[in-house]
Length: 66
Image (cartoon, helix red, strand yellow):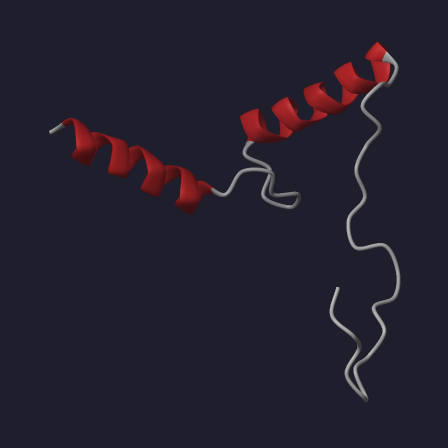
């Protein structure tokens, strides 16, 4: 790693939090069902799906097929 520069701020806190790889199946099922229900309802308050990005990907695939 590089040495710190003078005046460089120290990075504080946890940057990313990942779920453990091994969890209870009921907890994983409820989490996935919650996501599925939000996507199915079109709930925009807790955006899980980036609609613009998904649409661009679909259009890109269609253009590739032509």
